[in-house]
Length: 121
Image (cartoon, rainbow, N blue to C red; front, side, top):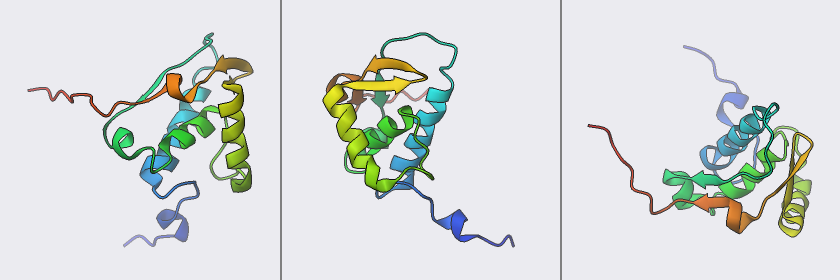
């Protein structure tokens, strides 16, 4: 049997749930890193399934903004998180790969709670 490390059990990140905060943060960071050769001036984010139903309570929206900002969960100062999120809210801007894009929480990030899930037959 493989021995587990404390790092296998506990993950560094914000929020009450690694699946709804840490993983979306890392997904947003990965998405951001994939945009290096693409020119754009805005993005639209839709969260589905359990991320849309419990995302606000689990801070999924905050995690996505931090990932898109290029912050790394393991090295981000938790004291600075509130200030960074407040700055995004006030300026309605986000910097991705040296490009400034408009990011309005109400117009950019959507919790798709009422989407119908289609299951292929």
